[in-house]
Image (spheres, rainbow, N blue to C red):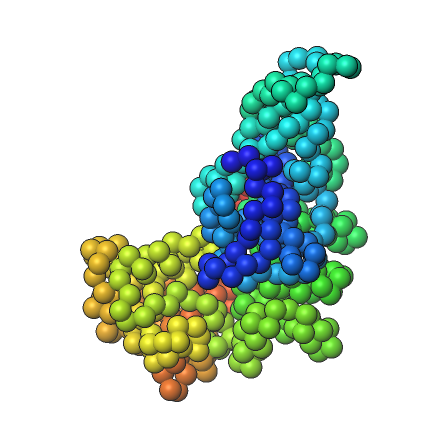
Length: 418
């Protein structure tokens, strides 16, 4: 899919509403010989404001339009360190193809959708530079692998850019450990260069005091963007540790729906089911089929533990939902025909928890029912959210367990980049 051919395509949401048009594509070089990663799109909105759309939000791209899902952050796009705009920075750049000595110019760049939401640069179209007085619009174009263009390779990176390229493929815990090992000033510099999702994932792995220090040193707009990308329960835990005035400032700058999720969680005690739950479990209607439920469970953004059960509720299907009917285990869904109604597969022995349930009660529930996720309902039987087993472990481990993990006390050295 050649990027120059996409410029100007209309961008719409899944409901068909127009958002704007494509202005450019953001890529980032990665280390270890991997092709550059396509991070996101730059959309030109109708107010001539340019906004960033991460590739995780891209539902489909074809010759006539680009469809995105989820809520679009309309804040103005600002390029981060290590990012390259394909059309603005690369198109027309003079390069020398690897193994040759003749200069050429980059005519176009092709990207390809890999597994999940991972898009990569695959090929580059190079055009010969015409000699003086011999210009022709029919100058030959050569299609070459991305590796043949040195400017797209990690070998051209030094210092901060090389570190950021290496971090692209790290697991969140490894990025967090790199940040933990840095001096505070250096940590902030690198955090500014990471994209919102990667920084959010890394923040969730850092010790609590380092989370607070880092989020308060970011610009409030950026801090709000990062909090929006965090799991609501983790964002609520972090917000709760901030001074009241700082917390309120950040909540006001977040998208209203994300801020409301956090505010709803803040009313519960930290060690209660309500304080540990996420308000975004997998929810389906009674007339949904197994195929419908599995499609929701396999969405990449859904954590594995949270995908362990699908909850059946009457509309509305966003928490707090209509009346909670029951839960269906993922393994049960995998054993049934795709056309089977999920309401016929509900585990009738699985009882929901109230948000006031204490940590000891919640942990005994997991041990008794041997599940990965449990429902939390209010007294009117509306589903408020779900607690996952990793949420419980976070609260049962020593308070400084993340700090111990950063120092390697909980993780063997040879597994740090596993």
